[in-house]
Length: 301
Image (cartoon, rainbow, N blue to C red; front, top):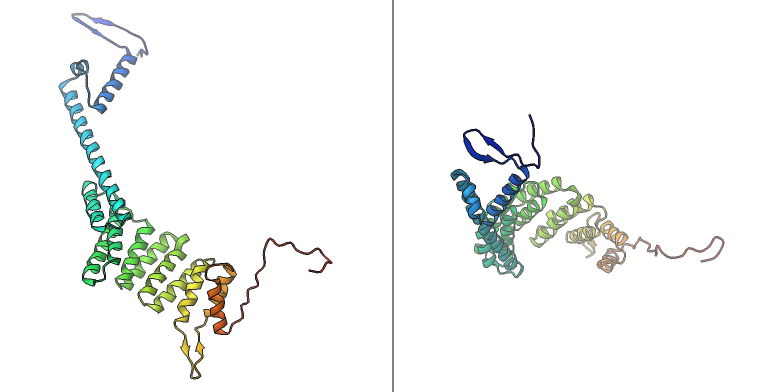
C-alpha cells in the first residue's frame, strides 16, 4: 500500500470523468474550516454544496445544541452571580430566587445547592419566630444534603450541616455529621470542634460545648483560642462552697495557662491572668523575648 502525503495525485477513473483529489493537506484544511464554521454557526455555500444531506443535518443539529448550550450557560452564570451578590448583601429572598433558578438550569452543580443552603441558614439567623426560622433551617438541611450527594467528600458542607443541626437542637444528628467531617478532614478537626463549641455555647448547651472545646484542644494542641474557650466554658460550671468561695472544675486553670503559653500577648491574655488571679492560681508561664541577647559567659545579667 502507498500512502500519499502532502501531494496532489489526480487519478482519472475509466468511464468516470470525475477527478478524485488525494491532496490530504487540503482535505484536512477543509475539515478544519467546516468545524470552525459549525462552531460559529456560519457555513459557506461552497461548504454546504460539498456536504451530504446527513452531514448537513448533523451540522445543523450541532449548531442548535451549541446555541442552546451557550444561551443556557449565560443564563446559568447570570442567575448564579445574581445569587452570590444577593447573598453578599443579605438580600435573602432575592438570593433564594436566583439560586433556585440556577438549580433548575443545572441541577448537577453542587456549588449551587451549597450556596442555596447557606442562604437559608443565614436567613434563619435573622428570623426570631421559630415558625419562620425552623422551616428555613429545614431548607438548609435539604439543600446541604443535595450538595453532599454531588460532592460527598466535602467536609465543609458536612460541617455546615452539623452547625445547622446544632441550631435546630438536633444534637445526635449534629454529632454524627461532625464525626464525618473530622474523618474526612482530620487536619482541621480542631476548627470543626471549636465551631461546634461556639454554636453549643450560644445554644446554652454548656456540657456539650465544654466537650467540643476540649476535643478541639486535643485535636489541635496549638489551638490557643480553643484552650481559652474551654477554660471559660469550665468556669461556667464552677460551684460555690458554704463560705461563698468558688470551686472550679479540674482543668480550668490549666486551660488558661496553656493559652498564655501559646499566646502570651494574645487578645485574651489579660483575661486569662484575671481568671487565674480569681482562682488563686499563680501565672506559671515565664515570658521571654526569644530575640533578646543572652549575656556572655561569666558576665552578670
